[in-house]
Length: 260
Image (cartoon, rainbow, N blue to C red; front, top):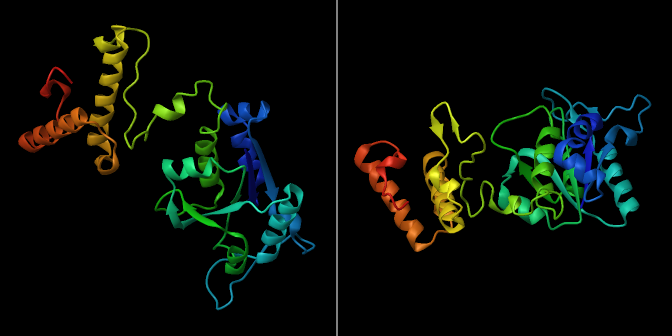
């Protein structure tokens, strides 16, 4: 999979993405990431890419010419017109479902704005998707682009050493990930749950599933409306709801039946 980032700060995005999992995936040739410097397509001798907004107002607006020219040059190099994602708080909030959809693409372009935004004509000419990292404002689109590329890359076959990881971590089936434990078995009088030491894979799988449901109930109950639950899991969720309603607090694991 190939990622192309149209940015004013190529060193920023490449410095972050060339490390850790994405960096190793690039070294293996599983993904490629390039940062296209929008300033390289400025016709101004000082490489200006912004100007004052028509109609007045604070700040500067990125001009359409360098952005569109950068994209057109990219299209010429790869012989296709890939989807262009514009990082903006006005876009749809990015989530795992969107990541899974985007991971099916061969090429993706991320357009990173700055200043007071981008001339609308550039967006109308090249943008296909408007995505947000959340309901807040950042200095530019580079950080959201890096977050999304990291997330999407994990779904590309071969990027993770353990292919199961991408399927069972947070937000799988709209549930948060279960708690994890490693050595030592006891730390500051806190023991690893016995079921994880039992070697009984079915019981471990069931325990983890119930833990995911309870953690989602405690931390992100909004996700549960779209969660895919079995009949037994729905009964467990009902028990969580009942216990919470009766006590006025989130239930402790000791409040629940021993079979869950």
